[in-house]
Image 1 (cartoon, rainbow, N blue to C red):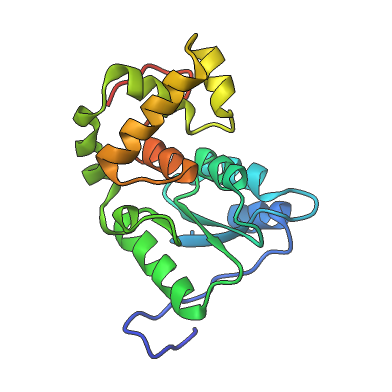
Image 2 (cartoon, rainbow, N blue to C red):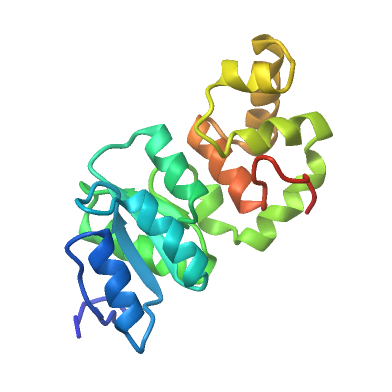
Length: 199
């Protein structure tokens, strides 16, 4: 049991050396953790694969991806595979505490992207969907992948300029200002690529 000066107390169930070790320990454990801090870069089984397995086998576990690098596509891939949010390893203990408690209460957390995602639950975010046009929704669904804007334009048979206009429109409507924000927003309202766009 780890005691802190904060009102919540966290109990650490176990640590794992790599993704395979984590999956093995989850399989053997009689108690599932509420939150997992999952490193992206691990030997034997990396965080992407482990995240995908956890999301399928234990969908009730909330996972925060972790990395030394604040790279857009690393973050997007972790979120797409089922992570609830993402933190970098250089954040303070206070920020880690905030990340865990916010994830438990709101179901989503991302350090340094937008307070919008840290103060509004996933179900509440879905209420924003009617303000998105059908064309913007199609674009937004691709933002949850590792596709670049030019690839999205090709996929949707549109010009890159049109894709940029969809991006800028969503930026303006929802106060989002970067690609990770678009991906997180898309995932939070339930969008996935190559599926019917319905909420």
